[in-house]
Amino acid sequence: MTAILFVCLGNICRSPLAEGVFRHQVRQARMSDRFTIDSAGCGGWHSGERPDRRSIAVAQAHGIDISDQRARQIHIDDFDRFDLILGLDRDNVRHVTAMQPQGSPAKVALYLEEALGLTKNVPDPYYGGAADFEAVYRLCGKASAGLLETYRI
Ligand code: 4NP
Image 1 (cartoon, rainbow, N blue to C red):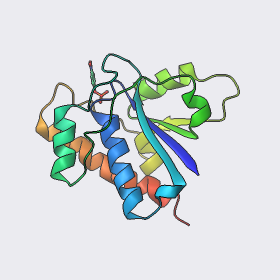
Image 2 (cartoon, helix red, strand yellow):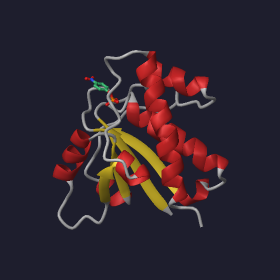
Image 3 (cartoon, rainbow, N blue to C red):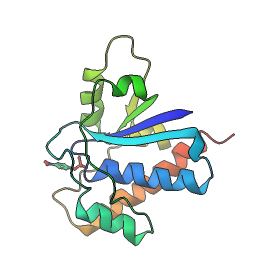
Image 4 (cartoon, rainbow, N blue to C red):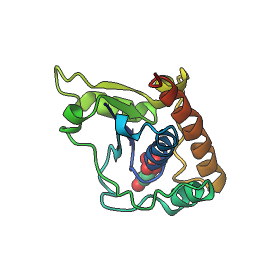
């Protein structure tokens, strides 16, 4: 069993897509019983909210429903609950690393680096348009496939 937490700034745009797309691919691979999957934000400004309507829309356009997700802020307990905590950009990784308790075995890494070996951020689409959300969706598709590949037997 592997527990993976996807973390961005607000938990309404990028990490809900990272969570939703990974969950979808895991389900399609019939590997759902091998993962615990969740997402969180570095900040709590949007706690309790649904994902951004543009994230819901781009996922829906690709046949994935993320509308029942609710935003939450990363919590210190997450370092006990998750094996792998993936920041969608370097600022997120820095924030999570700074919070990590001494001796916590959780691995904190940059999402695209862990998944695809790319030292790149997933750009924040919050102030962008539909094309920016589509670009995030595509990155999440590729990253999820790369991530899942490392767990196939
Ligand atoms: P996310 O995008 O980190 O991908 O969820 C953002 C969401 C909200 C804000 C910034 C980025 N905000 O400033 O409220």
